[in-house]
Amino acid sequence: MKKNNILTISIWILLAVFLMEAMWITFGKSLYERIGKGEITLLYKLPDYGANLCVPGVFGEQKMLYTTQYALGTVDDHLYRLFVPGMAKSASNGNVRKSTEDEGAYEKILFGEAQDENYINKEGELILLPTQEGKEESAKEKNKSKVFEKIPEDLTNEDYVRNTYYTVDATTYTLPGELNGEVMMAKDYTIEKDTEHPQILIYHTHSQEAFSDSVNGDSGTTIVGVGEYLAHILKETYGYQVMHNTTEFDMSKGSLDRNKAYTYAEQEISGLLSKYPSIEVVIDLHRDACGEGSKFVTECNGKPTARFMFFNGMSRTCNLGEISYLPNEYREDNMAFAFQLQEKAAKYYPGLTRKIYLKGYRYNLHLKKRCLLVECGAQNNTLQEEKNAMEPLAHILSLVLSGQE
Image (tube, rainbow, N blue to C red; front, side, top):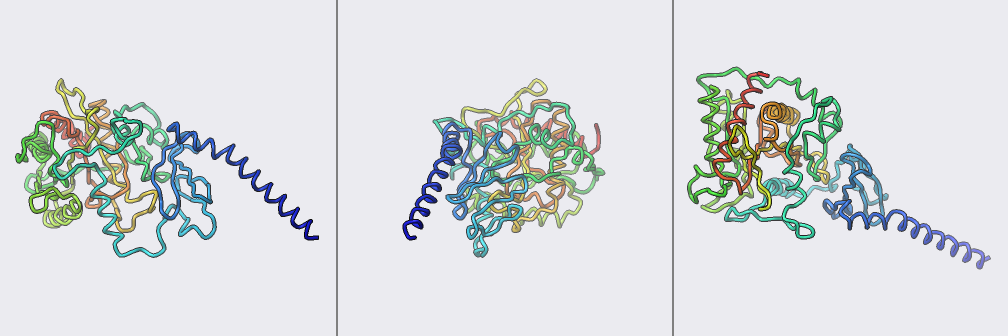
């Protein structure tokens, strides 16, 4: 009897080994080969859950492969995840987080937001991220450098809208219905001009962002000077009352410190909005960063012009799901406002803008429904190229705010 039991157990063990080997041959080996070829990109590691892998063309747009040492499954647009019992802390709609939040979670998220947008050292110089095979640009930078080219199509087709208008960062995701272009275009963002009170507020979370020919110590040659020129055009050419805030939120005791720039900016800008309730449009103007092998420039109106990009924060990440610490009741409006501006740019200045970039944090876009974060050019553009971009930017802003076609 015992021999029969031992034989039965041995057969089951052999079958299990055979099955595991077959799974490795048919799937695991192929998976690792595809990783090696770069067809599957490792996005990030989760200490409690293993790793997330982006698998283009296998599970469709915005779908991911979820693996751990013990579990394997797919993640769809709603981020439902498969876990081995006992491993999962939570498994509904992507709200994956530890069961007990530690007291520093909020500070960690704000620190991540502060460091998230681009990477520079204390002297304001670009730090290039590690790349595969010695390539000069990271995958993120390559995606962000794509020129926006509109192809006529049904704006209710969300796959078309996502592929044509957006770059969705690998750390975040969209939900069904969020990228319906027809719905976004139907929203009304017009305002009545006020000749006495400020209506548009321009500021710079990262005031020290400079350009290839910026003069050290001269803020007029940095992104602040570009913002001043944008304010001038909106006032003198289009008749809006504009306030330009030049506070250096990223400086501390005379040194560059971005760690709490978004926190400090939120405090001051919120105060200004309370003091001046007439303000309806808030613009956080930045310049982006890229590898030295790239440059965001094109010709517009016969002049070399920095290409710019609208940037939306989703307040959700693949890791955390919806970030309860960073709520944004205006997320849909922020996205629709940027989408309408992108449409106007495509009509009047084709090739000038890059795709709208969606990323995981909030970036203070919760302050108004017409909040806008603009990344214009990069560190290797000239000041004049940046200023040249403010003319079409002011024009498309006026078109949307006035309701002109």
